[in-house]
Length: 471
Image (cartoon, rainbow, N blue to C red; front, side):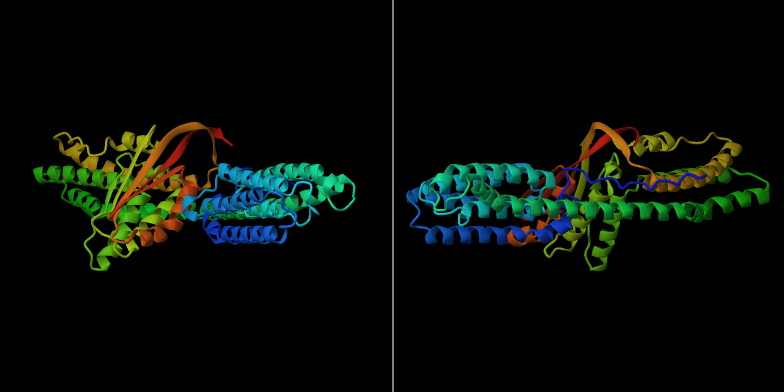
């Protein structure tokens, strides 16, 4: 009797995940929800206050209540701005605290003269503020804030129950008041949880599909890489060796030629290994600027190849920003500088490259002044090309298919700085960069923008962690 293979369970989304963090572009589309909700809250507060003037005993407290609720709505709109992403927990707590303060002030302004709980604007406004947090904060946090706020509103309703115009058991007033806050909070938490789980499932399925497809093409990819390297390097090395074997004689020119070929092969290999995704990106943009009739001068300063430590989200965000800068009207093609510094260890493959080829920029050790060693050196370099190309291809495929490592603590911080000259008014510059800054703040730990016309400087950090074992 065979035992059925259990279906692998999907990994759960992190408890701190939100739509804005998992899908920064989708978070941009959700931003208009904040000003719309803020407008509704403020309008309803003003209308409800004017219509209940006969119940208000302390006008100053009523005005203060409306003012505090307006401040809470303004904080919501400010905190949800894409260029200030991500929406932090502190901002959410401040918004809810201001909403509760507005509720207490409104209750104090009508104390002993409030006719009924249902028409109080503060609990409804507080509930709408919680509803607007759905795209920006985790569902557990929204639920906690909603329950806490509902408890305060319920206690206030219990305290007012002896003075209300309707004679009903006090706990019914508390339930009615709490529902006005709790219902929108539950809806907000449910939306956040469902969207986060949907995004997480989609990302998990996409990674599995990529791993499966990459595994199928592993052998083909390695073969293609080897063939390409042999095509590039064998054009000089193989004809030279064939000519020496055919003549069966060696000359001083052959020895000199062998040394030259060995140096060229090593230089090409080091250049290939040192080339990162950032170099490829800048090369493409430099070519596009040249095709537009410009004379670009794009500088990359990454001596330790720290760009290789960036994950796929960080690479996509940096690439989109650089492409956007290069295509902005008023961009100076001679001003782009991309620099990566850091604290802590450089990415692991840098040490492997140093062991294989020596320090970057070092000249190769001259071969001994014998014909045999000179020719063998050239042959060994050609063989190393095949081995290195195949190993590099397999390493790239393995990196894409390997399970995620278990991290044990912060090891290094890579800081990338991008400078560019952009001759645009400040307003147009901010509007053009706002979507990209939102994504950067979602995938990097710290983002700082300095603008001194026409120079624009962006600086952000990427954290890398050590790995001990596989999860």
